[in-house]
Image (tube, rainbow, N blue to C red; front, side, top):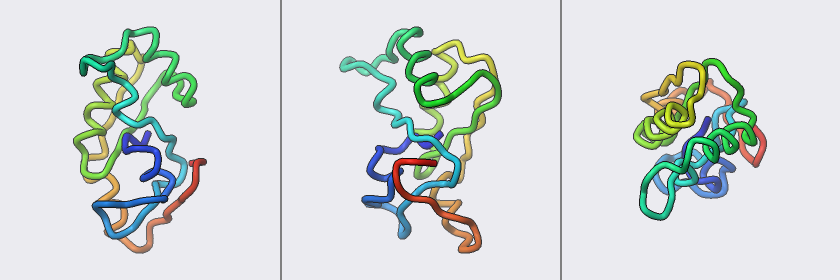
Length: 111
């Protein structure tokens, strides 16, 4: 799961890194979608529905963002939802992924 804002996932904008887009096969679930206006996680059922709508099934899941911070938040949201499986955070995230020009890059709304 890509925790960055949707326009960054789609490759429409990239304010930090030199290359826009996302890791092929990833799904977009922006971190800020998991919290209410007061900054608290949404309730468990709402989080479950959100992950399910994004195609996240039970079992192991990996998260990434630009540098790892939002990915960690998304892994915590998975835990708060009662997700049955590990949530691995790709610490290097997008910044690390694009450091190797041989790695594929996707853009658009689909993974």
